[in-house]
Length: 580
Image 1 (cartoon, helix red, strand yellow):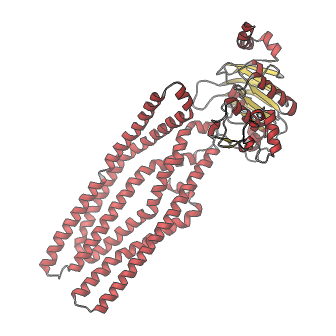
Image 2 (tube, rainbow, N blue to C red):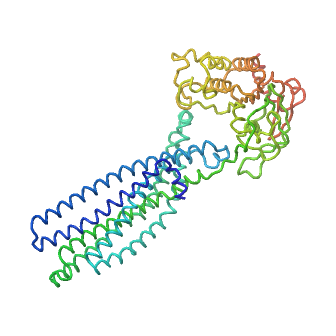
């Protein structure tokens, strides 16, 4: 798992390598300082002159400064490596998500992916920082301090060998108890983010229905679940500190008591004061190293689940991929559905589409109508491979869509989905999603075709008007027309409007359809609509019911021969007829 994550280091690998090297040199110098200090004390005890003592003082100052320099280098390289690693990991996850199909997105959920890109990456980078610096420093310090403790204290140093396994067993037990809780808590983080995201996104609905109290309670419950689990985990991890303190005091009591007795009883022959002083220093070093290692264990325990969640996204394979040497040239905008079957992932009982056979010639205008849940949107999502069929085939330009290069196929198909999305930026920037190289004249032409120029020119900033995230500062109808203009800028071979004029009035709807007929006659136009007025003038209309095609024909034909279409038409025009 860590090996996969460390692939995100890339250009920061040299800094990740330099950090432990600098830390190692810093530790060596720190461990040698008590040894030199003990030798200095010995020289003083032996009555050496000022010159000899000064020499030792200079050596100690140089070693301390060198240790400081190596520590500073380690701090700088660690910061660069950690920040770079986090940036690359976040980038790798984000780029991976961009390649996901709708099926992959549905598997993880939006809120979970946001948590992985933020909270999880933060935990992983913190753990990485500890691993390349503190996790290197602590074992180095432990080994050198152990060695020097045996050199200076002889058999007395065995107390450390007894305490360390005891401490290690305690830490492993703590981790074993805490890990399942952390695994559970990150799923609850997803639920918390989902609650926030849903509430903020639908804040107008919340306020209009006066449901603030309900949403607050829902958020409070999700937040309380996270708090409760973190509290349980922290209670377990809290045993880490007293365990360390017990080990620290056992060592200190033993070293000071037995060491002092040995110095006094042997009159300095078995153990000298300088050696006892150095041994005490090494005791602090060893226990400080153990404390740092316990901190690392805590952080790694928390981050392991985050690492797993990041790897889960990176390892995920998109269910829709471009074929090797896929076709990049789309001949025309004809669309053929041959025996198409489709079932949403995870639903093994119900087919969303069954036995769809339909031929749409290039340049035709086709209306698709039906009751809610009749799988109208599902049908058109197969054309540009937002999903893949589970049976049968969909062909564009006479070729199975699975044989096309995915980017080329989607560049030839413009889809204005039910949920119209605008991004933060100017109107120009939003329109140029359809064509990054579009000129101002082309932007204005597309806006006219979509009847968007009517309101754009009324804004003081015109096409430079700033659109807030999600397009919250424009109306639903304005948002729809901007999305249509954006789709037209692609100059597609197939244009799909998925109920994308529902928020505009019938007069504007008619003007948009007329403009498309006149200005893009060779483009195949598929219009999904709830109201019959939007599809009456189509070359033919497809009536769907329960995931099947119930009838195909012109408006006049369907009024005479199809009960579903006739009922929809009558119900929509009944109010108008009564008013007359």
